Image 1 (cartoon, one colour):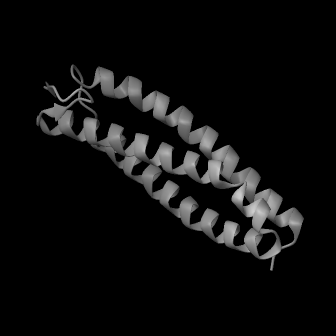
Image 2 (cartoon, one colour):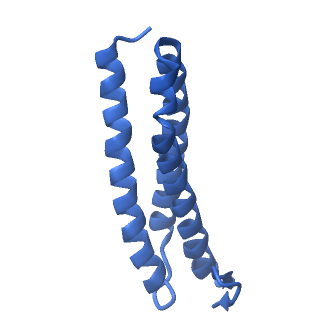
Length: 119
């Protein structure tokens, strides 16, 4: 079992990564908007996949951390729910942006949030 200091360090890691991934999502939003005129290249698409993979890895590590925290304090573990939500929401956003980038890269239309087909 980890010490409280080790758990705090891991939680800080997750917070820093969420901040980094939100910044990446903002960058990808701009890239997706520009991709209609200049489709993303394979290196950019690979980077999106690697980012999603990193988020999945952190979700697993975060779940393990929550389990460990719950063994010490169920109340403290329950207070980590917003962090769990934040990690999953940024994964959802990165995934959606990846779909948009792939659709413009492949020339396939993508359906926007309002149901309209974008080309």
